[in-house]
Length: 76
Image 1 (tube, rainbow, N blue to C red):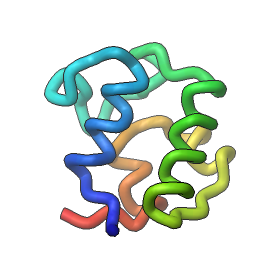
Image 2: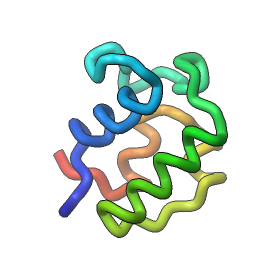
Image 3: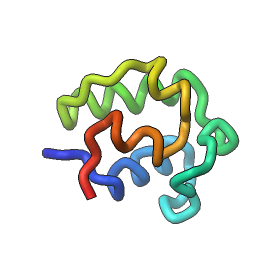
């Protein structure tokens, strides 16, 4: 099952305790409380649920949904 932008946003919002519509696509997720432990949890879930292999460092370098989408192979 492919990861969609809607699901990506929902996953991030869930781990941050926010509503998906409150997470802008272009904002730095660290400003919303994303830390390394939460990021590792997300990467593990995407690997388990969607078979996505992505380097933690690549996501940590630019922590914004719009930057992650191409790295994760997100579909519309």
